[in-house]
Image (cartoon, rainbow, N blue to C red; front, side, top):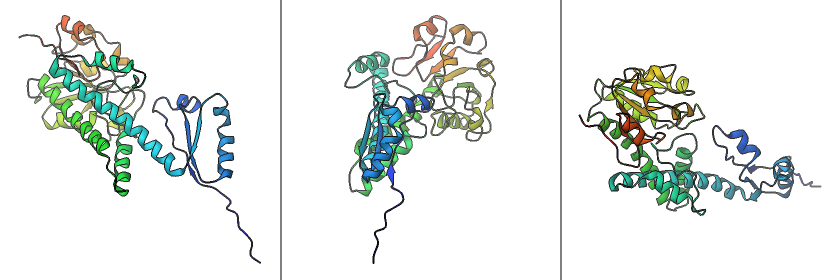
Length: 306
């Protein structure tokens, strides 16, 4: 006689939403836990597995496998879109005289929008946003659907990184040949050593290509950077060495170590007083009053005459 054979295992999808640098906190205190399942047995097992988390009030969302996968890609694509959007508004601010920090604050106070991912900068990178936006575009294409907004996000972010190169060239009077450039930060964000798709990569490559003398410092990312960036780059053990005799300092990553620096920390060791702040971590007027030409993102630069 025939016997029914029951499977010994079930499959499902349990996407993670952990931020680099905050993974433990995000696991213990998640916004949500998403699980895509196909059987009641798997549901019971996953509910049991996550019970230590859900008993503290964190939601467990059980959906189909396809929905779980699409939740992951859609979430990251939407956040990437917010980054690209605010960077485009930053360009508008620079042309119109508005201030991007004011815009971000005003938008973020609307609870429908929220404050997160509204900080203008050099463009997104890392392990998730570049990969998941492209994955969503490909999934849409496989199903004969358009992903126009996501495609525009990817294009906008690529253009943003190129604009940062132009910003440094402008601060150097149109040419970086023979100029000593200090790069402060290399990773795609603070709190990680991740260099994947970091805005520092095209920036460093372009500076070297155009003849600049580049010194770089990052609290966590230099070991990885050495395997990715041009060999001509000189890596330093601290901020002061990177800034020593530099013509221009470029803030690429918003490390806390950099946020505490004052104008005198730069002025005492740099050859010229020029700051390109791609993260808006300093007070523009304070640096201008100290004799610096200062190039932020999302507001007009201030330049010393003569």
